[in-house]
Image 1 (cartoon, rainbow, N blue to C red):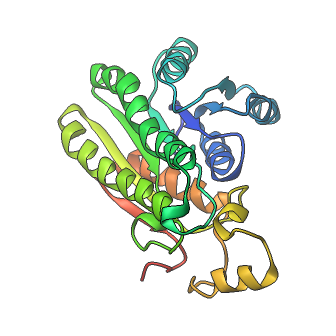
Image 2 (cartoon, one colour):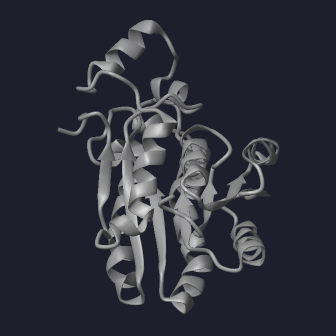
Length: 248
């Protein structure tokens, strides 16, 4: 029960890595707001996990929607101890000059602007409490970029730098900020990263991961739980690779 009596928000929490984080948080005693643009999926997971969870629809790239999410969480829980910025998207693999402007804007809005918006609306609350943990789900793409995913790579590199900058600025207020860098995992985004899902393409992806498997939502849940728990009270500003050795 490492998160007993903690309250949390997990964006993109209805599926994939987000659902893995939600399940781990609940197992470790936290109350969780499952925040997702897929309200139906968020409600289904909340119903499955019971009264430790509430569902909230959110568009993480829209300031008014993020503000409403934060206000709803504070009204529900009284205080918010942990925010996990997990919601993310990618563009399909393509030459960098051929990615359309609409896809570029969408990737930067959901992967980068969302971090700014969540900070804008939760940091004052955490400063008032003189404590808090923020966890940004970045990617190995921000450390060791793959070709043909250039603007996705850039958005995750931005997130890693933002994490470190936030950590330095917020440390005097008792707020820790960390990130994790997952490798490609068994989530709804996997096919988007690969372009198409075939045994040959999967084998090529797996050949770059020394441990020889894709990451699982449970892997992310375990790492995020540690970084957001009091066990990690001396850790801030790290971008921990949860990647089976891919970035070695």
